[in-house]
Length: 300
Image 1 (cartoon, rainbow, N blue to C red):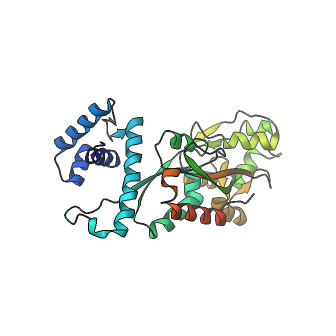
Image 2: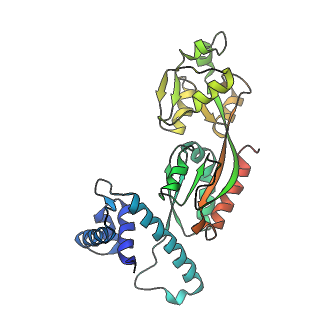
Image 3: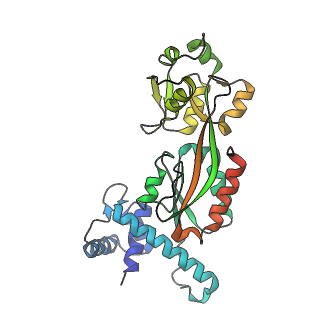
């Protein structure tokens, strides 16, 4: 039999990042939490928690946590129909859904979808940030229950829904363009003009150059791991970068930003992939994501 009380302890440790905070939530001592985790690890035959600050789950620990989220959803659904089964002395713990998306999607449209969903749901959300080319890996490893991804092929055990495309513009301040591109945007000029890069996985600037100029250019870059940072730095004249149209449109219309080369957007096609085990119970979540995407993203 699966030791569900021990799995609840594991989930509390991972969600709070600490044995002490998990103990406070569960109303037990930290030593009791440590003992339950140790016994569970001995039974599984593998480490389930990386004991650090904060504590995180190992790959096997992630799988157990996702299982407990599914169990929590089932219990919530059952108690809606049979409230007499609830334990009045131990209030029901709200289920936290693990979801992955890119920072750009979160800043441009996805947060609106999550806000709409949260208003009609009792679920809590843990939104992790990863490049859209890599969020599918989080699904494959069982770290999240759903993700916004650029991967068209359905992840094993998941349902896939088309969302549309997140449109990017290569933009900079007018002063920056005058300084670095007085004779137009050429490979030689790009090799001197500072750009922005989110992290080592960010290939958007390189993709735009290759698609627009039909060549590769080794560009100097500022490293800015924040979507709003990209926009603010461009407005301040630090460099150029790929910004979602939702964030740049008003600035371009007002003349605070200009496209490096007009009418050369880069569209990144996005999909919503969600675990089949949870898809039916989270139909409202999927419906909300699709509705907001249709309002915000480029179609076709």
